[in-house]
Amino acid sequence: LHPMLHADFGLIDDHEIISILGRDNAVNKSEFFPLIGEYAIEHNGRFRPGYYVLWIVEAFFVGSNAGLWYANRVLFALVSALALYVALRMLLHPLPAGVVTLLFFSGAQNEIWIRLGTAECYGVPLLLVGVAWIAVQLQRHKWRPAQLFPGFALLLLAGFMKESFIPVLPAAVVFTYIVIPCFFTFVIPDRYQLKRLDVLMLFLLMSGLAAQTVLTVTMLRTYGHQYASEISMISFLAAIKPMLESYSKSTLWFVPVAVGLVTLLPRNPRELREQGWRRGLMELTALLTVSGVLILGPQLFLHGGNLGFAGRYLVPGNVFVVFAAALGFYLLSSGSVQGNHVELRGVVAGLLIAVALSWVL
Image 1 (spheres, rainbow, N blue to C red):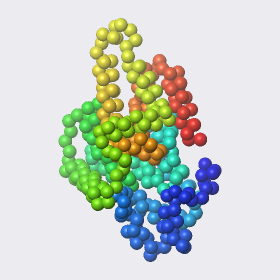
Image 2 (tube, rainbow, N blue to C red):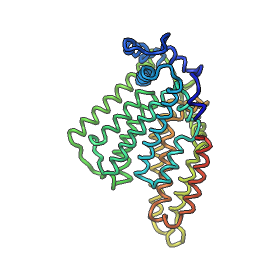
Image 3 (cartoon, rainbow, N blue to C red):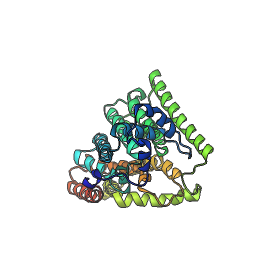
Image 4 (spheres, rainbow, N blue to C red):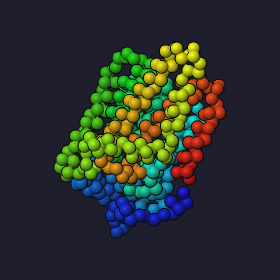
């Protein structure tokens, strides 16, 4: 932390900050909107106007003080961690919620907090605060789109930071109103009726999403940018291996999942003949599969063919890691196993903390 707060601007990406600040090392009021018009519309096939808008806003307030730029990244990381912890507390006890929160910061994606030129440092706080709002409202049984609109709106705004965040909103809507009613009917009933205000809120969200998609495709067609060296079914499948390896080595997210699933298995021949454990195992497997498709599928498509993943490209796909690990701890903390697996939960938590701290510290 100390070297980070005392570092100077870097040679890669940070040169744009110097360019924005100009000779006066500051952004004047008269330059504010002209700079947004100059930078927000890129001519290389990229669509991330919100990123440059916030970058110019930050330059206006912070100026050329590199220490303050890095301090802002620390602030963004703390806000993200707090929002994620609040969301996880809707499902988990304090300790496992804290452990899973650490997993989001465990891995090469941590470069987004120590580099000033990454769009993810703006997108992640918007994403996690939006998820926290949705989780809190669902825990209060407020599931209507009008009630969840502020959270969904933040996910929509995150899509303006970088193209990889655009698929998050549709995934969240599908998960909330299709997946949750199938698996957690006590949160959202499997049959519900929307009011006019709900329909209007969904229409506004989908209109914003459509605008993002159309503008992204238009930029691609106009300027011919390609996110990966080759996009094909082969490259798509080839991208799965390095992405999952990166997540798995740096978080061990599969450990609580595997241990949690094992606790569902019967412990005597009489339980083996019952159908409940089979149904539970199949439902949880299906839930993990659907979640992986919704979260990781679009990321694999965007980065298909790019086998050398930079750390920032692991975001926001690492949300799947958080969800899967949280589900595993939820199984370990459920009423049926709570009294028998205290030590086991402690071992799993200790292992993940050790791995996470090796990246965070």
